[in-house]
Structures are given as structure tokens and as C-alpha cells.
Length: 281
Image (cartoon, rainbow, N blue to C red):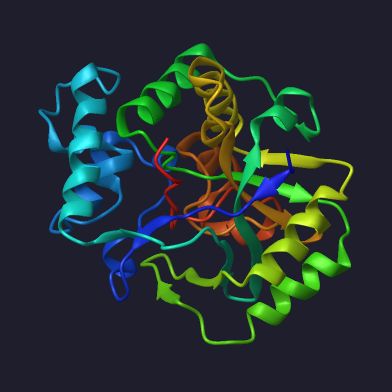
């Protein structure tokens, strides 16, 4: 089994990314997400924070919340807002804010390499948050948030990402926090094979953010085996020397601790806000 592989993303249809774009689920409270999603029926917050479509008194861990996430995802698919790519691909994903730029590769990473510590952790997880992500994955039958991963020096990988980003992107939208999101699809077999081999040659990958997503993906894979398609998790490997915090990437407690208005002073990327959905599990 390779360290990473391409996948058929379920992603915004051409011209619809701006309607779907939303911050990560854990940087907003339920009340903030509800306000942020007003007048935005296709905001990804309806999937990542589905309690915003229920009574405000609803417990965010209630079964009805996960059921609403599945309902909202299916609604966006039925409306053609989210479409499945025809073939497995890699996706170059770039975030730009002021003079900060970060480019990574959306792929699926092997859960077995997470379990054996080739994909390395640096923090503990809490049972409540782990259970929440497990229930979200199970309910929507997809992975709705990527794991941010750092990879060590790899000139061949960097060159492929840089060359790909020279052509016009398939997605180019700027969020209301001023962060520009660009994405390029890599679907040709030769480049896909080169990237797969290059990553497989790396000694290890390092989780920067997404420990709960990773632990949840591992638990879901263990429960659903032996189906091979369920043994991977959505990840965005990024050069370790390109780490940078951008607006909207910190959870509420982190934003308060570091000073959200001065996030450009702190070099440690959380993750981009344009969530890419994984293949149906």
C-alpha cells in the first residue's frame, strides 16, 4: 500500500466554490457559524456545523445534528453544487494572504501508516472530539475535513507542485478574510505516478493539524475493514518550510491566545478553509 494515493474528490462545481467556501468547523462557535451562514444556503458550514439548521438549544453532539449533516450534503449533491470528479486525481491547493503563501497537495494518506507512526503525531486527542469526528464520518459517509501534514525536503515534489501552479487554476476564490484559495487538478497518469513514488520514498510525514480527524479515520477504517477504499484519510501534505498561520485558521482559544489580528506574526499553519470532500466511504 502506498503512503498516499489520488482520489475522486466531491468538490464544488465550476463557478460554485465561492458559495461553498467556509472556515474550518472548529474555528467558529455554533452561534458564530449560524450568523456566518445567513443567506448562504450552499455554505459548507451547513455540513461541517449542521446544528446551525436546527433549534439553537440542540446539543451539537445530538444524533439529529449528524443526520442533518448527511441531509445537507445530499441536498448539495442533488442540486449540482458539489460534483464527483470522473477519475482519481491529486489537487494542488494554494493559500495566499498578503505576502504569505502556502502550497500543498490534497491526497488520501494510508491509515496503516498513521497506525504504524510513519505519519507521525505530536499531540494527544480527547475522546469527545474523536467520537464527534467518527460520528460525522459515519453519518455523511465521507471525510469532510483534511489533515494538515508537513513533509521533509523533497525537491521533486516541490517542483511538480510549482510547475502545476503555473497554469490557470480550476478554482480561484478569495474569502471574506482576505485569503485567496487556488486549486489545480493533477489527473494525468504520469504525474500522478511520479508524485505517488516521490511521497512513498519519504521516511515519514508529520501531522501539523488534524489529530482528531486522523484518529477518527483510523477508528472508522478499523470498524469497516477489509474494504481497501476505507483505509485512507484526506490529507494535505505541505512543505515543512512553508508553514504559516493565515486568518481564520486558529480555533477560538488559539485565536485569543495568539491575538487573531496579528496572526501573520506566527508561523504555523492550521489548514485551509476550502474543505475538499473525500470519496464516499
